[in-house]
Length: 214
Ligand SMILES: O=C(NCCCCCn1ccc2cnccc21)c1cc(-c2ccc(F)cc2)cc(O)c1O
Ligand SMILES: [Mg+2]
Image 1 (cartoon, helix red, strand yellow):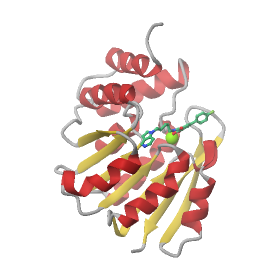
Image 2: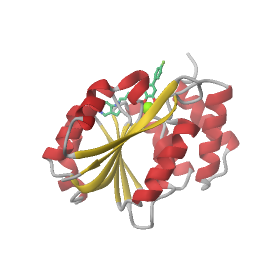
Image 3: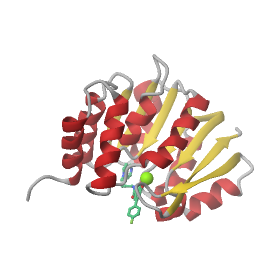
Image 4: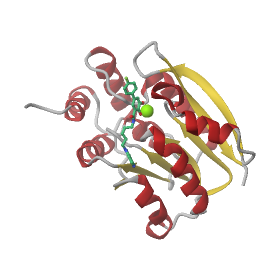
């Protein structure tokens, strides 16, 4: 029965953005999702906070849990220094198909590796598969009840080092209360909340930035 929402987002990118121009891809998605139909991209308001944290960390190795259509993948990858890698994990094969096309349209395919499957299964395979020792930066934007188990899994797999920065989307809406509890009451994390709003709305949301202390 017609195109899916991710397919409509891809069409908007192909129609309104310039190939190889990540900023125009971001703008095309934001315009479509603000004026035509809402979608669960991190969006332009929280996106500015994401950008500033990525620029501050300047990661050589980055992980994103929850690709969706690749909007935040493009936001992060466009800021990465040459030679660095962003691994992004997507559970839904249809979203992965769309995200690969949007990432390629932005010209960022050489910086991004998209893994399909559940984070709990894939995280333990990252070291051997990509030869990554640890992540400088992790963006959590997948199932909100997976933020805590996957953070623990990253610790257990030795994928976090002293100074690794975790940035979690949606800690207010839809909410990740167990995650806030975990990082705010854990001596191994230095954590701070960045207030903002739910993408393309006036509803309160925000990002929690947590530095792993080792
Ligand atoms: O649910 C959200 N995201 C997660 C989508 C599904 C992830 C599935 N998935 C991907 C990788 C992966 C790896 N392992 C396991 C599962 C995995 C989300 C929702 C809202 C939202 C929705 C309605 C509303 F009224 C208000 C807010 C806003 C956001 O910004 C969001 O991010
Ligand atoms: Mg989100």
